[in-house]
Structure formats: C-alpha cells, structure tokens
Image 1 (cartoon, rainbow, N blue to C red):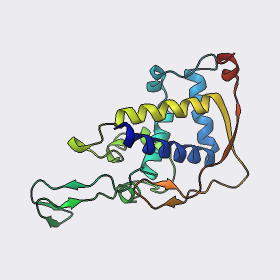
Image 2: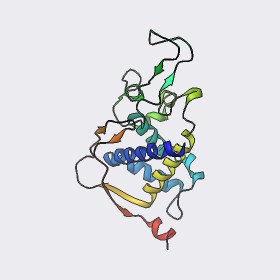
Image 3: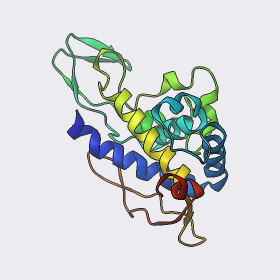
Image 4: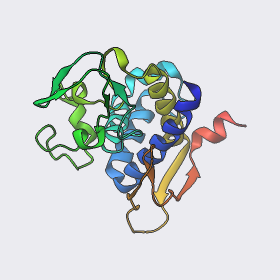
Length: 200
C-alpha cells in the first residue's frame, strides 16, 4: 500500500500545485483558509484538516481531472453480467476508464474546467471514482487524502508560490499507468512568516 501510494500521491501533489498556480484566485482562497483556521504562529496539524474544506475540494477537483491511475486497476467479473448494454462473461478482465468518466459532460457541468467549488454541492463527491468504489476501492484512500492534504496545506502555509513567468503551466499529460505531467512543474517560492517563527 505504501509503495503504490507514494508515486500516486506525489503525482497528485504535482498536478494540484500546477492547478493552483494556474489559478491564482484558488491559491489565494486556499491560503486564506489556512491562515484563518491555523494562522502563522504554528504549523498545520492533522487535527486542522477537517476545517480546511476548500483545500480538500481543490484536491478532489485535481483527482477528478488528473486521476493518478486513469484506468484504475484491472478487475475481473465474478459472474456474467450486463455492462452498458453488453453481456460480459464471467472471469473477464475489466478496465474502468476513470479519466473519461471524470470528464464526461453528461455527468459533470463544465467537465474540463478546474472548479473546486463544485464539491460544495451535495452529490458531486459520490460521482468520483479516483480510488475506485465499493468493496474493491483502494484501501489507502484515507491515508492518501490525509498525506496529500497535510503536504499541500504546509506548502501553502509556509511559502508564497508563483509561476516562473507569466505563461500558464503546461498541463499536458504523459502516457503511462500513472498519469504524470509531460513537462515537470517548475515554480518559485519564498518563505512566509510562520517559517521564521517555527524554525528559529
């Protein structure tokens, strides 16, 4: 679980940082939320995470648009069943295209737009399948969300971030089992007051 979760969590963080740097208004909202609920006198703690709802929405929206495993993991049918009108025999290997489902305009409004606020609406989170669903869902979901949330909250709390120039960050994807960026993220940062207070 830790081995599989390391790469997917790192990839998700890179996509998340890329998204918020391309949307400075989102970065400001995340920073304001962290400053309001945690402040600049101490570092974010795991107990703060339930209060950081907008930060969580940013992560959900990143997972929706840039699912780390776009085809999820292969599954096998236990019995013959009907999927999308097709008869699928028992013991068939099934791949779920989460990338396509998460960008389906019939399921999501403004399906290809980065809009963290969508998860404030009831029922939106239930459409997410980044970790699979049901009995076969990823057992590391809770750990992954906590680790990504803590890391992102600390990065935003401790540093002021900006792009290296006025151009938007390239969001092109590279083929592979894990959805990685074609062009690795490069950004600039400078420390915020909390760093000097905590690390004297």
